[in-house]
Length: 250
Image 1 (cartoon, helix red, strand yellow):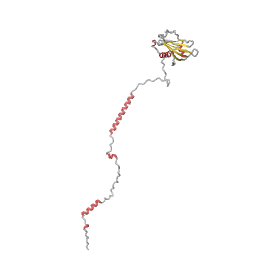
Image 2 (cartoon, rainbow, N blue to C red):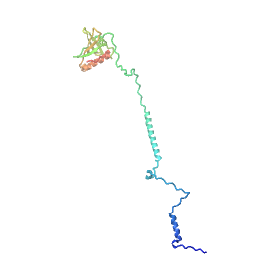
Image 3 (tube, rainbow, N blue to C red):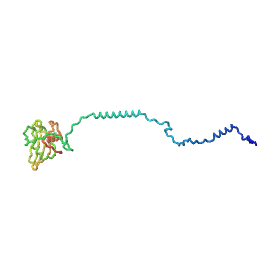
Image 4 (spheres, rainbow, N blue to C red):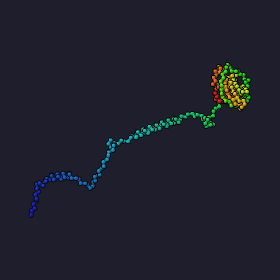
């Protein structure tokens, strides 16, 4: 028995080239099979780009030269300051002598510019030295000052000059029964009368008194001395010569 091959219809015949082309095309469109040994990397997440990446390369660090320059400038300034401080410390001012220690913390002692007057042991007489009266017409003004007994007694005794440095000759006249006492002031070198004081003393009591008036030479011999100048002169003379510090009066 013989076998017969079934003829293949023409419609199903295909060319060898067509077969290969189909297979190739089919192979191209078929998805590739995953390999068991190769693993694809996981998908990366989206990240926002930094501002440095957008603008360009990052800014390089500062050069070390600026640090060196700044350090050198700082050293120069410190060196200048040290020089100026050293120069100030080298300047030495002379020290003032230390002041004398005060006896009182609040008040300093007042210097004693005048000497202690020597009070005569007895009353000075008008005949002790040659004198002359007021030249011309003297001036008279009232003067109201209280005198304690010690000051009345000092005016009563007067003053007799003992050396050329003593410029005044002072003596008193009185008192009368009413207690009126006159105190005369003369220049010791020439004997010219310069001033006269009128005192009223309490002869019955403790001996206190009161200065009631002044008479002085206001002529050319005293350069036309005024009332204020005459009172200042008598106040200074009583303090310096007799040790009598007159109070402020009218």
